[in-house]
Length: 211
Length: 211
DNA sequence: GGCCTGAAAAACGTCAACTCTTTTGAATCT
DNA sequence: AGATTCAAAAGAGTTGACGTTTTTCAGGCC
Image (cartoon, rainbow over all chains, first blue to last red; front, side, top):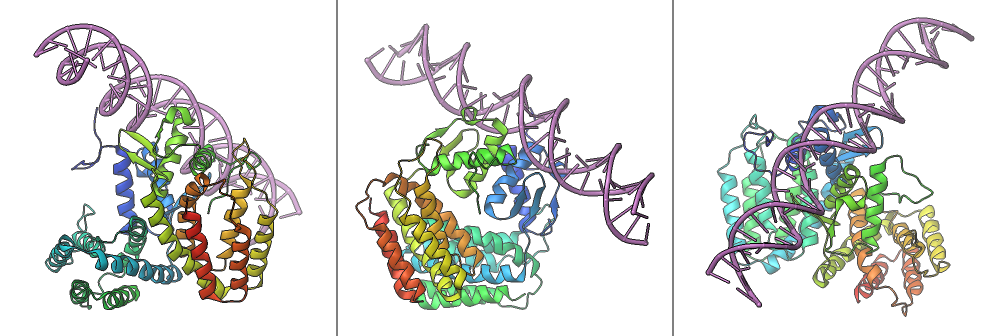
């Protein structure tokens, strides 16, 4: 039979592909927050329903029985709350990573830092791929990759995805020295100065939320 | 977040009901950790698939394409990690609740405390209903209900469900003064002594994890 | 006896048709 | 005009059947 949709089809199942596509559309705000999601327009019904169910549990979508699905709304209050919690969680992850980090961890951070400095802010490919957003996610993940708590990392990932939606909207405010901020965080982490690193990270997150 | 679907609460949709049922079965360990889940045995296929998808995103189930679903495994390492993170999250929730709590919050706590002291540890109804587990969940939710951070509460709820699975297994160790521990936490909360309340809560969670 | 081979059976994923609820909009009544 | 009612349209939820992949297990080979 035919293995559907997509120029490159790495996914094994249609459901998986549909899930990834809709999720990317939400995170990139190509699907407006609060807007209604019409199942029939999104692809094969079954696959879509399953994908939306997963996204519901993830907090990117809200569901009401017999009334369909909506993209989760956003608000300044939500951003403020989200940022505050992220500072706590990411901070805890970073502390743990600094305590347990080994050489591969250090290498990963530096590699991600370099990749980011060499990736210009391209205006979003038409296929939906966003290289800048991707390296940014990779960097922040590398920063905490040595954290020894799977649960903390899982929560962190969940919150990061949420923040991505706001980040997409505040783009173009490119007057910040992002690379410099990242650089200083890495320096503090390499020096194993947990307090300083967490402080810098907190400032970084709070600054990002100003938009 | 989630309203259990009992016999008296017929859910509007089959999917919703199936989701609630399977979830309850996992939390109560009627579905053994790590065991394979056969879709055809669980009910109508579509509803089951959708329910399992949601549970996957919630962390109660693992999924591998073309290979079906498994109940998420449990381990001592996972319990230790989970407990550590829970102390942090529940602690943060409790601090916020103590800071922002009003009279209705105080009332809720006392009501839940009383309900628990009057609910004996019944040996699990045949319909799956577990009154003791329910009032326990209600109490811990009431404790932090005045927390002003929706995200913290959401994370807390997620982690609580996970811990419920372990709690089910460690039942019968009824030689602890649970009501007393709960009582002391409430007293500290009412006295607005955040440090003491969090300390007592941490001890409470850690003791529960000893099993 | 242990191991590889391959066909049958089970389970997973996909699809199209059907039913029921919600929504919409036009005609009617106050 | 504004509100109300009811019927048609749209969309959500459910069902059973179909194709594909994985797993099982019996038979043969080393």
